[in-house]
Length: 292
Image 1: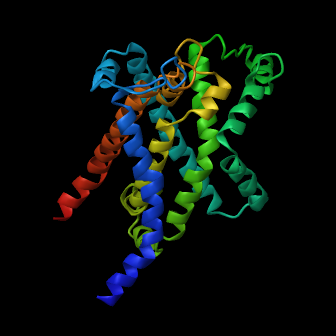
Image 2: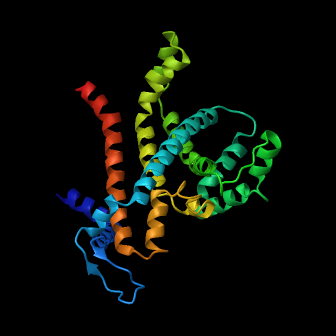
Image 3: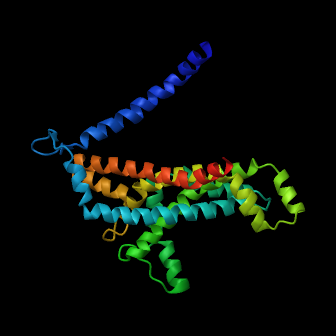
């Protein structure tokens, strides 16, 4: 009994912080989502409008379009980060000249604030002064202008996200690979298994929990991408990079539609939870049922 009491006492500070900085803000946003509220209007008071905001979301063409481009952005960004991150993790498992320096440089984007990342890529992709348009024009004869080409803007935002967050994936997978026991790999090599078979039947199943945790983190982060994209493209051209986070920002701040923006935020949170649950079920449930 005393050990349980001590455990709750030790957890109490964390639970209190989570309650005031997690639960309370969510309940407040949920409350605001059932109101029509513009604090900068002539009448700054809240007006309770039941589920009108949620009903409006269903018929919001811009929001539905933002969901589509966000889903595409999340898919390509997270998959690319997993592939590149795993390859870099395998490379860092080996010794090569300049490994420490390269590893340090590789980790630098991870410590940068998103708005700084967006500013860097804005400078690098500006047609008149950017190094990327200059190289693409000289090497391939391609004139990059993310302010005019929707496809180019979408691809550049994906590359920017991969550049920013691949170090996180790499570090997570390095930790998973280092912790693997050597016995299964040695036995597989003795039995004549090739590298592809070892990867699919030994490495991948053993690092599945780390991959799943990494995908959850990156999925949630990618769904709420705002700062970098606003700084780089502003959500344009048109609505090519108007991701869900950017759409919410533009509803809440420029249009000061706090009630409707809160309703969209609650729906996006629900969709994020559903996406993570579906991912968990698809990757973990079949494995658990086979064991049973």
